[in-house]
Length: 336
Image 1 (tube, helix red, strand yellow):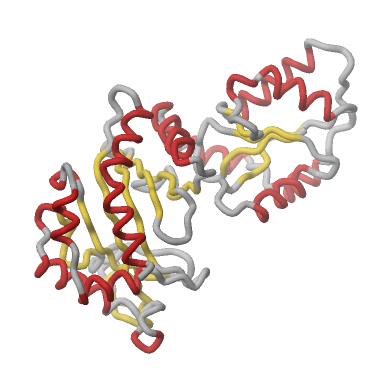
Image 2 (image 1 turned 90 degrees about the vertical axis):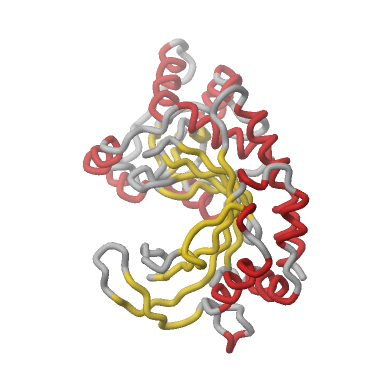
């Protein structure tokens, strides 16, 4: 039996299953086959003489915490391990056999005591935040793809789409939660839907029409960011905001919108029909003010605040409804 936990983010969610191979092999297989799931790591493992029976018992006794038709459970890995121990101690048919060799621990990517200390130094996600992310994924009927880390200024979850995305971001330092729509290019997948979006809007801007469709345009904020790339990471730069800052939808008119779009287009490679990063551009690192050469690309984000008061599921559903015209707009224009 194995218990998997989500890497990097301390969510009260785990995956409990069985395998005839090593837990590490099964975990690696799950991570390789996943197209929008969490990235998992083995948290606990236990060898028994009847894995199928123990798995059935665990799934049955923890059914109220189980996601429908899946092996995901709404509790942390340590609590799941304690539950399995309790189940084993309450019966006599299933027996623990020789423990899996300790030498397998490195392959399993089991956190060392050093890693555990590091993780414990971060403030745990409050229960409401964890419930929020899981509810977000359930409402959209997606597996969800976590982003960010607890030692960063934000973390959250997207729907995992490689094109236009729904996402939910938590800013724990200030206690804010934002929900929105995201569009960027991708060197890995070759999908550069942000290019036709920018070119189409430059040719025929529709920002005024979109504003008229929104019920609360003063609550919606739009920003075009300049992403600077260093391998797979994006170091913070002083030139981050195209147009200089984030704008409320109410502030944007056609002239300002075109100005931002023109700046966004300079972040793409004209030699590739704007479907690629602009290479070797000078940017200023926010960390130390050094001017360095980086590849850059534009990144569109449309966000609105999400209330944590009252019914969380209702709040998310209502915010999705509020932002749906914007989501449909970005999908439509980026596909033109």
